[in-house]
Amino acid sequence: MSHTVINPAGLHNPVEYGYSHLVDAPSPGIVLVAGQYASDTEGHVMSADFAQQVERSFENLATALAAVGLDTSHVVRLGTYIVGHEPGRLDTLLAVIKRIWGDAPPTQTLLGVAALALPDMLFEVDAIAVRP
Image (cartoon, rainbow, N blue to C red):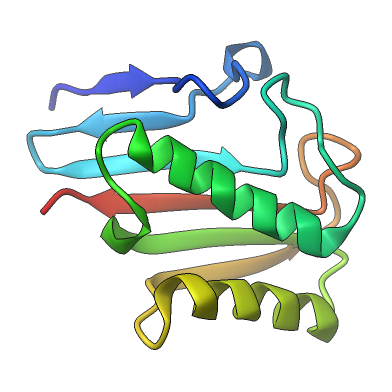
């Protein structure tokens, strides 16, 4: 399977952190998006607020998908990771999912975790998208 590693402009350079934002595998039509978090273009966490981190993480996911001509409608699977998971945080996430996908969200696995890659990260989302 041939593939292309892509690190789009508008997102920070992740290579120094040991990953890339997307892998585009056009032969089977699959795009794998690495965990997106509330990063600015330098890779710094933009806010300590959980809700703002969720919003920015999904904005970054959309930016990554746009780099290969896709959008959130092409997402078939999400992996979500919440530090200090509790019901209020789930409500915040569900509101964003509902706004983006309505009554047809992609499959999702949510994991409550003790910590993520950077100390200020409270939320991260990765995705699998499929080309039409």
